[in-house]
Image (tube, rainbow, N blue to C red):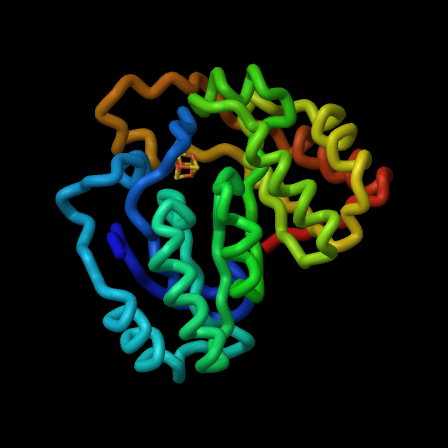
Length: 234
Ligand code: SF4
């Protein structure tokens, strides 16, 4: 598996203390991406590991998985390496280790992968297909289809919405999409825009003043909650 970086963090990418693997490669091109070096399938700093090497590393780290922690695969987009990812997730499940993925939710294999995941975190960046395509490079049809399947399945899901001024900072369209479904198995989180990755872009950085105000975040929260959607903050 091609890994860009790895390290521990607490409670940001799933519950408890987690060993987080950033897998190299992404099929989206979000113009605000804070890890642009993770997009390309090849990157000089990324390293290859076998499934067994990673499994052994995770097992050796077991003592660190306190407060309900475990291992999280993120990216880039972790589902692009789905064959090896599923193989590793299966081994981890058999070993009783908590698994999580953080995904852009576009993979045709997402539902299959989710079978082996204890904590599913998915981004939802825009409800409108054309606007999604404008800022991300591809439409949102696959994302919506996957989310709809997860809602129907009853599987728990944590949906993260990055909030970017002049891209997606009005809540009604999101609420209209989510309230069409039974989302009782879902929680929602808002991630206000930041510029941590701006200096890493070699191509032109096209987001101008993407920051959203506290009032905007509050507006999202209030509209979601008043429509019966569960909002969380990690
Ligand atoms: S999905 Fe994530 S990793 Fe991929 S381009 Fe968008 S922000 Fe970057």
